[in-house]
Length: 229
Image (tube, rainbow, N blue to C red; front, side, top):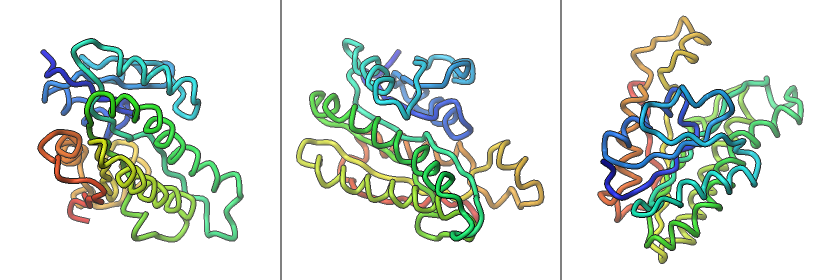
């Protein structure tokens, strides 16, 4: 039984995404998750999957319409998890295409989804938007200029949304994880101390809190979720 609210979650089939979708479902939300073709089965049971390319404005509009189209469960939250990491060497050695790719996959979906959802959130009387940036946005490390720049841009974008839509009852906050303990990250860094990484099930409750009414006084916040790192 849903609680009469819908959340649109991008990146819901990923390591952090599945934990976040599960947390919202457990809290009684109707969850709509845009996914790439073939990824529907990666979502927790109970989520509504919509096939979409989140870099395509037409697909994003269609997915947002599904999220906002349920009578009795208006769209009241958006969680922007979609993104990716790639290192490409030091700045002078990074091809422009690689640098721009990081902007495309980390910033463009957040912009498109948020822009498409805002009129629905306003019409529903307000709601919460949560964006996922990264510790790298405020503490860059060598070899990842494109990623750090894109995640810093997410912070700037979220701040702009918070400033522009506060009076309409829409809040926008950001979480900044360190390295997330996912199978993909373990495979790429097998010698790391996994105990120091932050787990998806530790981040997900923070996102649910920021999306819901309990955090209604909070907008424009940048919340570090670093684990033991």
